[in-house]
Structures are given as C-alpha cells and as structure tokens.
Amino acid sequence: MKRIRLAIVDDSAFIRKALNRVLEEERRIAVVGTASSAEELLAHISAWRPDVITLDLSMPGMGGLAALDLIRGWRPVPVIILSTHSGKDAPLTIEALHRGAVDFIDKQRYSLVDFDALRTVLVDKIIQVTGNSLASPEPLVPSREQTPPLPLSSAADPYQAFTLLLIGASTGGPPAIQRILEDFGQGLGIPIVVVQHMPAGFTKPFAERLNTHLPMPVREAAHGEFLDAGTVYIAPTGSHLRVRKQSARWQSLLTRYPESLPHRPSVDVLFESASPYGTEVLAALLTGMGRDGAEGMLDLAQGGAYTLVQSEASCIVYGMPKAAMQLGAARDQAPLERIGPRLKELLGRTR
Image (tube, rainbow, N blue to C red; front, side, top):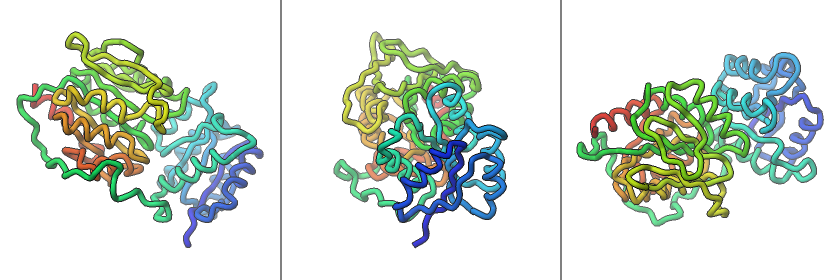
C-alpha cells in the first residue's frame, strides 16, 4: 500500500507534534519530515520527496509566502496552508491561495485538547488534493434519482436574456474565480454572486483582494441590498445567501437557515433560490470537494438556466462538478481558461 508522503512546516513545536500525533494511526499517510522554518524545509525537500506539504505562513526568516513560491518552483506539489483568521494571517492566506496553495485550514477552529475534528478535516483534504486512489469513492448513484443528462451544447437560446450570473466553488476556487472574473474585463453588465467555501473571517479578505486586483467592484453581500450590474458579491461565511426578484431587480437575502447543511454559505441554497427565474440565470460550478451545488444546479437547469461546470482536467478537486455531471445538471463543461470567455460570449449573444 503506497502511503501519501507528508511534510509538515510550522515554527510551533507544539503544532508539529500535534499533527504528527493525529496522523500516527492514519495508514494512508506517512509524515516524512517536519520543519520549523521554510529554510529547513527547502534544505530537506529533495530528500523527503513529499506528495503534499502543510505550511504555516507566519514564520520567522523567509516566511510562508516566499517558501510557497520556491516550493512551486521545485515542482507543483500540493500545499495546504495552516493559518488563523486573526491579524494578518487571513489576508496572507488568501494571497497564498492565489499563488498556488490548494487549500487551507484555520487552526483556531480546532481544540488544542481534542484533535478528532482536525484529524478528520486534515486527512480528507490531504487525500482529496493528492487525488489518492485510497480515498473512499463518491457514490455512483447521487442522492437524487439519476436523471437523463441535459444535452451538452454550445448554443443558447438567442432570445434568452440573462440578468444574473451565479458561481459556486470550494477547494481551489479563489484563483479559479479570479481567472474567470479577469476574463470578463470591465464586467458582464449583470450582477455576479459568488459562494466560495471558507471558514469565518476569510471571505472579507477574499473580497478585498479581488476588489484590488479586478477592474469591477467586489464586496461581501449584505442582507436586503439590491444587486448592481457589473458588481461581484461574495457570500459571507456564516450565512446562506439567497436571491430573489423584487421590483424587477435582484436582491440578496442572508439567513442562517437551514443550519443542518455542511456548508454555510451553501451553493445549493444560492442556486435553488434562483431556480424560479431560471431562464434569466447563468450558473457555473467550479473546482471543489463534495457535492454542494449539484442539486441546486439541477433545479436551475430544469428551470431553464444555462449551467456550466469546470472540466475535470482543470480542477484541483473534481468533486462538485462531477456530482453535477452525474445528476445531468450541467448543460456544458469547459476548462477553466474557457469559462470566462464562454460566459461572456453567451451574454453577448443573447443581448
């Protein structure tokens, strides 16, 4: 049985020992080395040959971001950031995701006594981002009854007037979302609503970074506001984001319910809320583990929306798009570099 080779980099001896401890009984993962600094990692990385690296960002010396750049230059090994949502760590984490880190874990969410939750999330992320075949496969039969796939087509109804774009993503989503939005140029002339799975404290820095790097305004969505054309709204962590038409304008609604879903915000909740207006909606489901967004996309597609998923080869984790494809919810699929131009083309054609 081939085990995943993990290198741990953190200036805290306690964190290094804790991660070693939570993984010592995990038969699928072998810790091949621990380092207290980026310099120590880089000195041993060729000997350790890790398949995946956990990396702290706030370290003395070189620091995590510089180390990430050098790791990515060595070879494209997946890097999972260990961060906190306080102080400067949240903006640093968002920057790391845009520089090539595949995912992150907020250390402040987990107890320093009970590491069961940390073990679960860490093992799941390591297996998913390495594409390890030992991971439990997703069920071939989705939670809904299998439905015939919608026809994959490059054509949209030329009389269909889209007034809203919805985007859902999880693991690997931040740089993918930025790439798509960059391809729009000055914007699409319609509101854009985004659900990106992130722990509390990270969606605001994510919105701020996009706002700095894009020609269109980007901000966290607020409850009850009317959505402006050409503006990007990021769903804040801790609330589901729904949309509705009010006096011919799109409006955002934030709610904690349903509380039972594994993600808040949930892509499914956003997509399902727009399904009564499906013929006006463009929806894209991007890279991410799990199946959030698949059933909501099916509701949108059945309501007449144009639904598009990211292709497997360009995903960090082909979980959410795969689930949508299994349900027959996707009308089209495309590699990341074609999604922005494709959406822009559809909007221009139907205008």
